[in-house]
Length: 103
Image: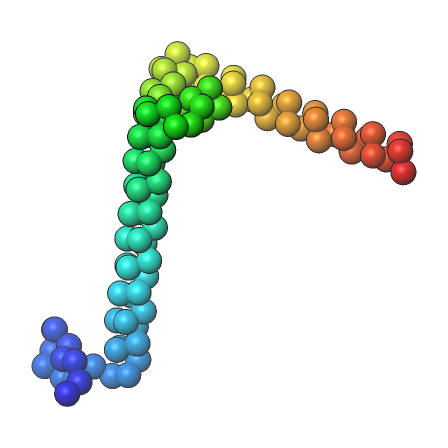
């Protein structure tokens, strides 16, 4: 027996069945992505609190969010992002120029 359309009482076409199945697949994938991200963040938080990882290099997600909020309220986040971006561009250009000179 073919699945019925909820709005009407006629059976779904093959294309409608495919689209419904495809939509359900995308919902499952989105749910699993969010679920795995949550598991990762929970494990990261537990690892940082239990000192399984060095919190100097890998701070906990909670502390990262609190730091971002603090920088945002102090209005210094754009300045820090700008300095980091400038340092990245300058280091890329420096490596590019040095590699041109050596080869």
